Image 1: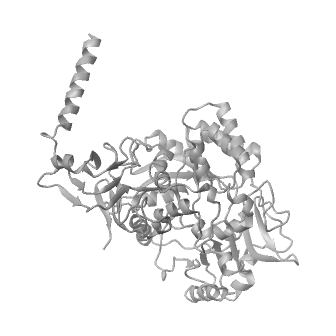
Image 2: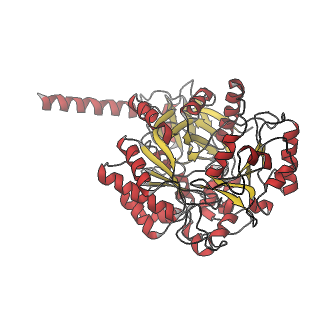
Image 3: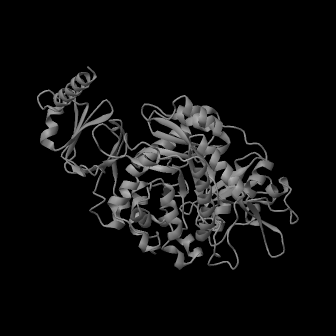
Length: 558
């Protein structure tokens, strides 16, 4: 009887499949795209001309003639006249936050090179902000680059902007900061103050703190200053939504949020709207591990609008900030190996094991080879204690490696999310020595070894612009025109895979997104050109014409 039951179920299923595939009875789709150059990122059907969307998913992918049967009176038909369509981009490591208007009291001063080109301009921008800020309150800025300014600012530079406000500005990496003299006084930092574990108060030749704060030293100064009043929730939600629009305008349909608190995660969820349905995979910080376990237990890992299931942690420091820990000295600084991580091997082993035993995905920021070796030891320890297939633990950035480290990464079944920010930060690689460049941001080696790889921007460390990031992976060329590590170049197709299906794999969602495949979520982008055909240095110039999430147009170029 059981055999007959299973046979009958199989015949019924086959009949159903035949029915929905039959041209004569296909139900009208909500949207049909035709006359397009569709790069599907699906190895079973790499290219197509057309597809149909219903219920927020792709229901057919094929040619123009076959898609006609899905067109009904209410179907929205997009005839793209040969334009290129790719899956929605997945930024696998970014830091979305509120983006307040420049004149808002809640906004920080934008210190990026396109805003301030000289030290005088930086000081002037901070002074303008101080003049609009009540005395005694923080004046903050972000994303300065010492390589573009000529040097790091000092406390004495920032004192020119104000001595009545504590001032702190962060480096483009986020791993170094500079504060003024008042901020140091509030934190009681003097020449006698000891460096904190995992941080450093940089001093001049006389032993005086210069105001440059590396890693955990910045947290001490920030904590000692005045408490910043919170912005009204309505303004904060509007500021988050401004960031969402920026992502959508660049073709990003999903973001892996690289470390946040439950309260900030709730704000991200509240900021989503029907018009701004950006999808999130949220990595809570290690201090919220129990919360992440609870969200996993109640099924918050299953939805594909907002998902949980990962913990973001740090083991190591910054490449662009020159604080990551190396086994051999930096090229430009004798006997300087970077800032050692705050954790011992035993402490790291215990933390990774705790995350692993909780059934969560560990996503660990690690850049220097010495940091990465410790991290691999910790993963190896956890997997020996409790073997788990398909864990997909991740190394975020994984910047300075060796072939031996990559082979261990392969053996341990890890996913790597490497930087591709040479366009903005290639000049920082000068500090590591040309002999290291061929083993930094090792995209080519990851592919050749069969190590899963996802693309990311680390926004706002570099621009959340997938086409620029793809060009970066293809050319390895800075904005100044210098190539860093040509050996690690990849093809446009390979880079596109990292930014689509690679990102989906990194969040256990490859069955639901990342390619234009029947049955998957209908997230896609219409481009003005074919990134696999244009000159590699022109990939960044391709325009995003439409961004579509779940079959709904959420951005359209005007």
